[in-house]
Image 1 (spheres, rainbow over the protein chains, first blue to last red):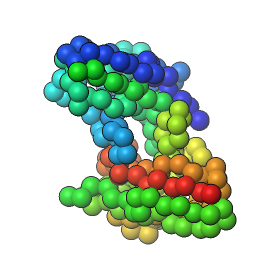
Image 2: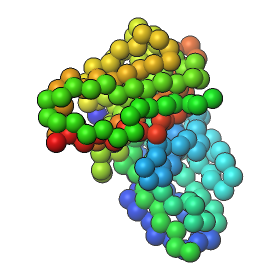
Image 3: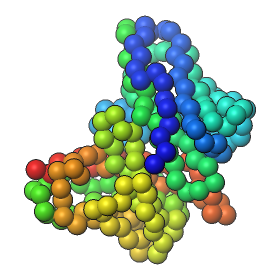
Amino acid sequence: GQQLNQSPQSMFIQEGEDVSMNCTSSSIFNTWLWYKQDPGEGPVLLIALYKAGELTSNGRLTAQFGITRKDSFLNISASIPSDVGIYFCAGKNTGNQFYFGTGTSLTVIP
Amino acid sequence: NAGVTQTPKFQVLKTGQSMTLQCAQDMNHEYMSWYRQDPGMGLRLIHYSVGAGITDQGEVPNGYNVSRSTTEDFPLRLLSAAPSQTSVYFCASSYSITGVNYEQYFGPGTRLTVT
């Protein structure tokens, strides 16, 4: 199956710093989703993107649907300790199947 | 709304045993799916359903069966458990418009160990 390349694999940052992560695919997608997963929990949807070039915010989080439709980016501004977790991207084309990245593990140092 | 619920939360099976993982959603979503999550592998699709009575295979369907008799429920059956099926299983649902499914919402997961 198709895998999305998500980077970086892990990040260790100081509280208050901004965070950037991205996801790339070899195929064109028409939907990009970003999730956060806390230990022992299911993924929680953060942002959904449906249009190339679209920029969408959810509080301190901002995600963009890349112009090529093969990538997406997630930024977190002014990180806080509760941002700790694993962030996943997911993409879909015209079919029914979502493809997931392998995740970015974020650690915020107080 | 309870969203997507899954039972049990934890399960230990012996090799060869069978069991059913339950999933229910109260959002009237047409699309439901089952994923397994393994370290370093992300989420991989096992089976999915676009509506009651309709199911299809995902990326890793072998060893699993599903059925969808109602909109709300989508159980996953392990026919003869194997150690390779040790994983965390997530059910998800999403709404769809004219056959196109949108954001997926996940349940809390079932942690399965096969010895």
